[in-house]
Structure formats: C-alpha cells, structure tokens
Length: 283
Ligand SMILES: Nc1ncnc2c1ncn2[C@@H]1O[C@H](COP(=O)(O)OP(=O)(O)OP(=O)(O)O)[C@@H](O)[C@H]1O
Ligand SMILES: [Mg+2]
Image (cartoon, rainbow, N blue to C red; front, side, top):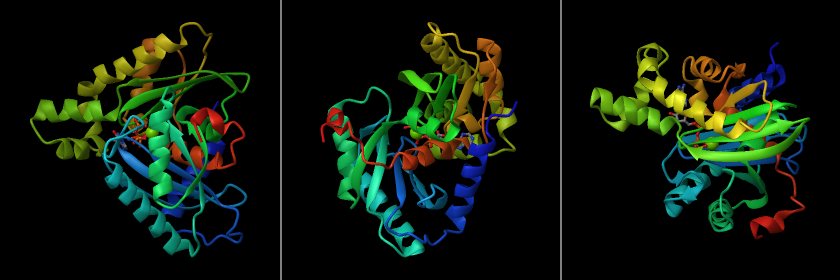
C-alpha cells in the first residue's frame, strides 16, 4: 500500500509554487512556516485552504540543530526570503509558525523565535519538527523519522496521537563529511557529489555506516513500542536506498514519500495557527 498519495500531491504543489507562485485570493489568511534547519532555511506559504502558493529556500549554515549560531546571518536570510516571496505574491507575510527539534530548551526556542520576529513576522506557534511532518503525512500508527542535515528526529504515533518524540545527532552533514574525507575534497564539493543522482550509487556503500547509525537511533527509540511502519522525511531521506538499509537492519517496513525534504516545512506552515499553550515556550 502506498501511504503518501496526499502528501505527494501537496509537496508537488509546493515544488511547482516555488517556481510559479500563485497570487492568493485572500491575502489576510495565509499560513506561513519558517524552517530554520541546519542545512536549509525554508519558508513555505499556504493559502486559506492550506494549498501551497509560494516559497523560498536557501542553503545556509547559520543554525545547528535548533541552536542559532549566527543570529545576524540567519536574520538576513529570513528577511531576504520573506521579501522575495512578498514581491512575488504581492502581499505582506505577517504571521508564521516555526519548528524546533524535540528537546530544544526554552532559551534556544526563544532565540529561534527572535530571528523570525526580527525578520518581521509575528510567531504565533512553535511546533516540534516530526510533529510538523506528520501534519502532512497523517500517519496513524508508526514512527515518523525526519533525517535532516544535523539530526534525526522521531515521532512515535499511536492511533493518530504522538506518544513520544526524540532527536539525536547524525544526518546529512555527517554523510557529506564522510564523502569529503574519503575523496579528500571540500565540504562543498562533497555536498554536490552527494546530491548528484548519477553519483549516489557510487557513494551509497560509503554512506551505509551512517544509514546504519540512523537505523540504530530509530531502533533505540522504538524499542518499547510495537512499531510496524517507519516513515522517512527530511533531506537526507533523499539518499538512494536509505529506506532499504533501515528496513533490512530493523526488519520493519520503511517508506519514503516524494520530495521528503519539503514535508516538514509544509507541516510547519499547516501549524500556523494561534497556539493556546504558548506559555510552555515562554512567550
Ligand atoms: N537529493 C539529495 N540527496 C542526498 N541528500 C540530500 C538531498 N537533498 C538534500 N539532502 C541533504 O539533506 C540535508 C538537509 O535536509 P533538511 O532540509 O531536511 O535538513 P535541515 O532541516 O536543514 O536540518 P535539521 O532538520 O537537521 O536541522 C542536507 O544534509 C542535504 O545535503
Ligand atoms: Mg529539518
């Protein structure tokens, strides 16, 4: 059975909206998600019916695992992306939701929020990343695993409810470092090789230990639960056959959607609704 029909539709619409933005009919009711990732900063805009209408993203190393490393750098990029989208769709982006890796402290969350507010948004909700991802996937039972640049985040879902979340280091940055070390090339050159579909077969053997490490992280966190499906999202899920390595190691069916790198940013935007429990994040 293929689980991702609806999510593939929405991520494809987002890919298309990145190139061809759609002017919204109702400019007052937009859902905006800002994903300050370790590898990419992504802004996703949905219309009043939660259909993707615009977005922008940039490769940037200004945030690491939910921790702002370069406040001014992050601020500048979010401002630029915001303006880029506003110019394309002809209206101002006001409210936004942001996401944090599970376990991020209140202080680090405030810092992330400050970046987004400093860029001119009002942050009306903060969600954790795998929870955001499941807003798009709609998995009822299983584990959603967001394999990003810096970390692997998990949300265990039972009967449609998230019962446990976790986040651990290991992600795409580590894969790039392995390639750079092996071929004695720069990080940037290694990143290009890693994302080149022609070269992925060649490097997949090299990256297998990293995929196995990710499998062991998943194993550790799902031990207490009866899990019969693993659902991968995040940019590093794009790696050729990563789902096969995980499935083989854990002996649990593992699935990945199309465009796994855009699932979480779209899910953040879907959560752009006033949070009633915002006190827990200190705002
Ligand atoms: N086609 C691809 N093949 C392999 N890896 C890819 C591909 N596209 C993106 N990646 C990798 O995915 C990672 C970025 O994924 P994503 O945007 O989900 O992470 P992030 O949100 O920036 O990081 P994090 O969630 O860990 O803070 C990078 O390491 C990038 O190299
Ligand atoms: Mg991420």
